[in-house]
Length: 423
Image (cartoon, rainbow, N blue to C red; front, side):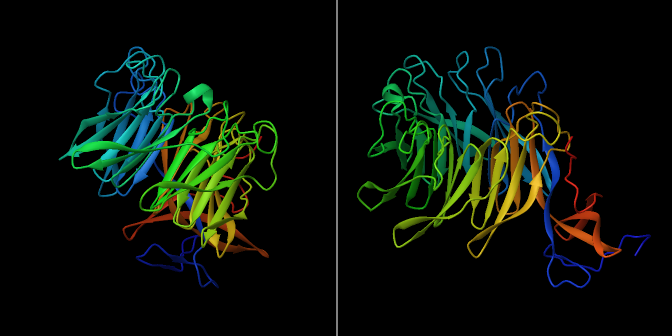
């Protein structure tokens, strides 16, 4: 004990026990801020797309370079530091193709979407596959669907899991949309299926968001009018061993005009998270039946969701913690079917119009948050809240992060106060 600070005990697994408590109180604390090595001249738009898997983080910068061709940056964890490993640009980059607006990574493969690529026609779009060879990343393939046409915006959304890639093309056929599945066979990526919703029509934007987990693919159609104008829907497909079959269509329990349900989707195991403006929804599957399990609240302008097992991060880019559209993100944990808000994440340099939270990703212990105008990506790691008695209540004196058995004091703040005070 020193002054009014007291640590009762520290466990090597990352748990800090509180006085009179049998379990740690957790919060997520910012442990790193990623920026491009060639910024601020390079990496324009850095943070608009983020992905994490294992020890690798992929960040898109869709306005990088002369003519805003775009780029993507790979960071890998060395000891406990995230180091930039590579900057990726397309082999046939063109003016304003938005390479990096969507990104996904899994092991030694990654995919970057470029939905405004014009090589095959105006705004056809491409998705680029890169493979890691040692510490270098090499462009392996360019994906485009067999049915692509002008204005498809193929690559607006991408998701990679193992040898399977799904790519969204929400502009296809006058924005009816589509989602295309590719599988790696040997060294060749083969188009396996083209997905479309059973009741989608022109203008629905099917494919605006996509996600894979095992034999399940989820596709968002945020402009579908099922429950009113632009209420949105999400479609669940399952691989039955021979074909990808539409299993169900998800809608919000409280449909709202212009809600855009399906703007972002994320599936993990038997759970699906779907975002719409003003809300995020969790659905759970039992014996092929998907039912709504919860609705984490969050706050302004929910745009992005990422689900990993029992943990969910939701981006709210219109939150005003540090001024208009400064943005924030919310962390939730599944407590036996009840999704409990654990923390609100705010950038250490939060400022108006950064739109922090427009992109999020979570994997194991790490949550990554980017924004439309942050030109940064922020890494958050679980920290333990250490309280001391103050009168009849608790006052947080320190927030710690445990990294490999080392305890790091991140910041001091009252338990009741947000990381950045509201105006």
